Image (tube, rainbow, N blue to C red):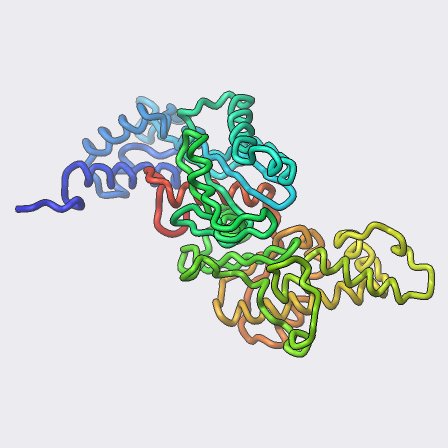
Length: 404
């Protein structure tokens, strides 16, 4: 009789090992007997596998502070070793590249940074790899304790091949990022769109913790959208799901000529991104006859939001136009995907507590579906998300289908 992989002794042992490790991780401070009862695995099998996990460093054991109910020897409890291995996260942005070390429970251990445009003028990949190894050395982490590398790229990305199909801010078209990195670094590399890894970070450790239907909207230079459906990233047939920067939120204005903030950017990008806010404010200031405090200033979206929050009429007008476009985009996204929650991230989101009620009032007017909307509060979101990507994609005992 021909055996399938699923019923061979070695594979059954692997499945049991995986179940036991994940059970210890989810139920820290647990005994061998409790594992056996809860997982319906024989005590000898549990003992054998636990000894292997101890030897490999995945777990550690410690004597309990209290004796058992029957007295006598204190029980030995098992604990998940969150620092058994580490995950490298890389977030490539148009301005900065961030590199981080994340442990197995999603804690950001260390972070480094380099300037994107300066690195692009040199050997970009070598600059990133040098930063990775420097960070490991500073934190006394040997290469043998690194599981893999997760990378977020700012553009449409073929996550299967690790190819960045189109990243306007970097000038990349069909750039083989995974291959380039693996030529110079000794760890497996997994690549995805930067907003996709950000939504994984929110689902793992942020506002959307353990939810199966999540939308993350990032507001920065442009607009990005990460989508999780049934616990899985939704990437689309050509890896372009979530490119809502091309969404039209005013058909009349779309019929007319409007400024594309950057070549390749869409309607929504050109109406709610930071540069578009600055450009609209500059246009309004040209027509102002009185001495406005922002006249002659170097404008940023952050500065304009600051003045809007302090009730400057001109800044409020510009910001309210932006918020309307954001709100109508969210109406469309929510009614299509019906998520449990929407998380708003990116630079503009730092003013989220002020503008969220304005956005919610528009959504509630046009949409009967109740959806929680949060502002992201997770520090190192994309680096943690890159770690989450590794745990989902890398062939290890911690790989799971669905929520990490």
